[in-house]
Amino acid sequence: MIGALPPPPPALVSVSVTNGSTPFAGDGRLLTTVSPNGDGFRDRAIVHFRLTAPARVRMDAVRTDTTRGGRSSAHVVWSMRANLGAGPQLLVWKPARSTPARTYILRLTVTDPRGRKRVYSNPGPSGPVKAPVVRVQAIDAAFLGSSYAPGATAEVSIATDASSLRLQVFSYGNQLKPTQRDLRSGGHAMTAPVQLDWRGHRNAPSTVRLTPADWPSGLYFLRLTAADGRIGYAPFVVHPSVLGASARVAVVLSTNTWQAYNFRDSNGDGWGDSWYVSNAVHSVDTTRSFLDFGVPLRYGDWDLTFIGWAAQTAKRVEFLTDADLDSLASGDALARAYDLVVFPGHEAYTTAHEYDVVVRYRDLGGNLLFLSANNFFSKVARSGTRLMRAKLWRNLGRAEAGLVGVQYAGSSRGAKQLPYTVVGASAAPWAFAGTGLTDGATFGSYGIEIDARAPSSPPNTVVLARVPDLLGRGHSAEMTYYETPAGAKVFAAGTLDFAASLDNPVVSRLVDNVWTHLASP
Image 1 (spheres, rainbow, N blue to C red):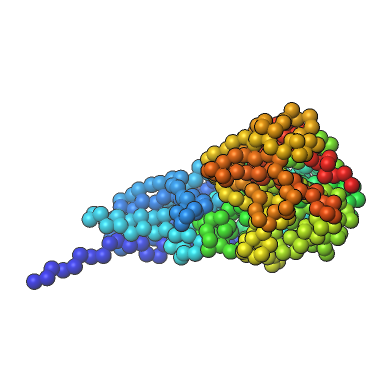
Image 2 (tube, rainbow, N blue to C red; image 1 turned 90 degrees about the horizontal axis):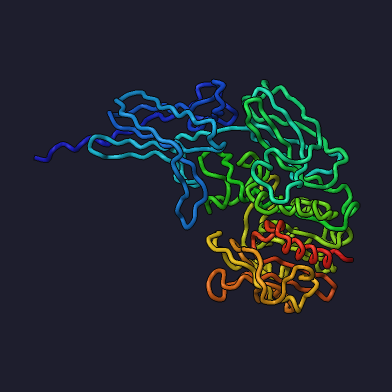
């Protein structure tokens, strides 16, 4: 006689999550918003479910990050266990006040006395949402445009349950080698602080308008502070009303890359909405607020150091964003306005029109300065506020080395960094004048992502320095320079973190030499 089959493992039925208070806009059955600031309002996440049989239930708060090679990067930041009986139950997570603002998956594991398990989790952006997600909210703010002209109305969307906010605009660039403290407390105030009563906007995002008056073209941050100490930032650029009116050098900030590296989870599945998190993500929203207090992930790596250096060395520049480049009719307008266009950061993602504008500018004799690596790597398309990733430019017949001089050759992910060895001091003595560097000399420590020449590089491309064998024998980073028959001069650093070393006097002098050479009409 065949024995009766054992009952199925215990299951969770009707799983839901709330914050015990008023929902925030966008909350649903498996998504809730909390703000653990100790005011008794939205301080905790309450998971409700019905258990089909007695079991041990474990609840983990899981932080997800990028995936590499199909393996998810996720780790548990908090955990609890409880022996529960059959029927309605609830579990509570009260995040610490120090918990970083972002979303967390509340993974539920049910284990019966036989050791059998059921796991409720969210496998990734392309998978079904089966576990509760908690959005820990601080002050989330983002401008609806990446740049504004002086006198234009700038709109910023703010999401927080703070009852009041103090708003103030700062211009950053006074620190050559900033720390996180500088990012949160430094800067030059452009406005007096303004106090806003926010009690009527605690349950949904709301928009605030401000007007950059006669501020010079530059990068600015709106700083928002709550009475409980929470703080948030929203970056924006003031671009010139007329290109070239105040300076003949343009600095293009890599705002497309900023958003590609923005791991904010807007759809509430517990995973960041970025193609760096999953290949299932093909587009990003350019109006999302940034994680980490609102400071872009790649901004602190190189852009701020460059801006501080440019200010300390009295460089006269105008600032543009990727969207500003995309809005130009052609490279002719860029050539009429500027003698030099500088890309200080990781300019990885460009639209076809941006690419056309910069190539046309170069072909008309415009000079280019690339202070990072992996530039003009991938095509993106702009549709409203979204950027959609397409193929690599080299796979579309437009290898980036034909413009930059070098192109992406590989990455050490920061595991190994080595100094440049100078090899072109005799070929370009103007670049190394006053640095004390001669052929064979070394300086700095660089790597992460690296560039090297390719078959599409202009035939007269000169290697000024290289980081030998950084990624193995024969795989070196190359710093290059070339000129065109039309008179264009193009310099490329060849390593991702080069601009971050501008506080090094040798590097500062080298870049200053190159700047002077390229900025001369």
